[in-house]
Length: 162
Image (cartoon, rainbow, N blue to C red; front, side, top):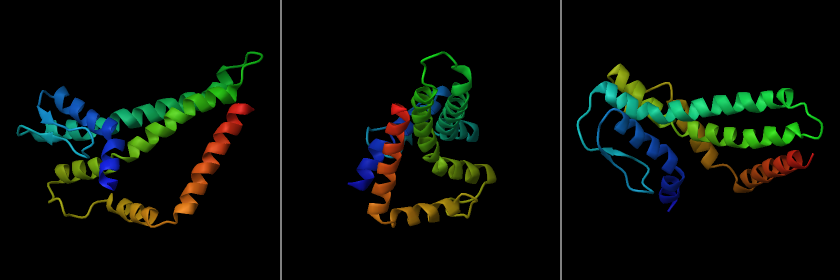
């Protein structure tokens, strides 16, 4: 069940893989809820890299753009009665979401690194330390995680009301 939920969470990520493969003119297969896209044709290394790295490029670009806009909003909006913090929240929440989805591309970055360095899939990479962090996060106490989520929601509502 956890892998199925993970697959549904990754739908935007996987649809960007499909878009990347279509961008280079290659066919692929994706079923909603699956955590992977299956290429249907052999591809060159360049085409594989475009398909692998397209989600990272989109999510990282969105994250950077929305974060910069969110940070500049209080300086741009100086009219009487406008709440700059509301705009920071309205831009900051999508920026946070784009950042979370950019983090889902770490496996793709690892695969691209292995592809560029011509190493087998089980080789060590600079991205392997993130797997250890993810494993520690999964073993963390659920009340702690629930508390952090509640704290973030309270901070967001407080920001909205100010």
